[in-house]
Amino acid sequence: MGIEVSVTYRDEVALEPVIELAREVEAALTTWEGDSPLNRLNKFGYLENPSKHLLQCFEKSRELFQASEGLFDPTIRAYLEGLKSWIKEGQSFTEQEADELRKLVNFERVDFSKKRVSLPKGMALDFNALAQGYLTDLIAEVLEPHNALVNFGEFRVSGNQSWPVEVGGKTVHLSDALAVSSGGGHRLSATSGVNHLIDPFSGKSPEAHKVFAIEADEAWLADGLATLTALGGGIPKVYQQRARRVL
Image 1 (tube, rainbow, N blue to C red):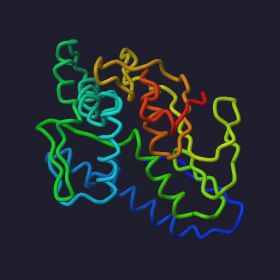
Image 2 (image 1 turned 180 degrees about the vertical axis):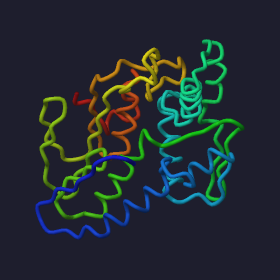
Image 3 (image 1 turned 120 degrees about the vertical axis):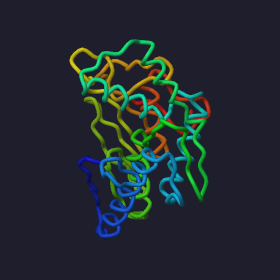
């Protein structure tokens, strides 16, 4: 996933299962490797016998998609990659052309089951908005009941002790999970107002470098809600007993 990771612990733990699990999940969810399951799905439009990790991410994404009324949408990848391609090739594009490309974005049209995943022609997706949180949760579960702070892109505590985490100049004493979003980061080009974080309804990106931090009972949820908050959606009512914004 191209990130620095760490496990900080207060008693002795075995790290071999952590490394093995991280490699397994990385292989299932990456889009960096050319022949990965997600890349094959995006290229051919279908995938037979998806892994348990892919299915879990599909399920969690559907939950967030429905709770946010479509603001959380992993199929935004089709739109983002289309814009990147135009910019890389030096092509100009109109707002109407961008709107037409954005018609590919709709997670509701994804068909998935234990046997097969199917996408409409031209659609693509990734789980970048929750994959790190999902992996962080799995690592923390492997480490239970040891007291440890897991950082695999997002934070999650295992054991029964809290840990101090610095975020945006503020110390959070964490006992569950925490995810941070810094807006959209770098723009796709010097003249583009779009970055990797995109509102699927408007095609626009939020203000870059504004930091949001969400604490929740699970890291995948904190991860997804941090994305929603950065997009201006806030925490859906269904999650307000499980999560809160801390920054």
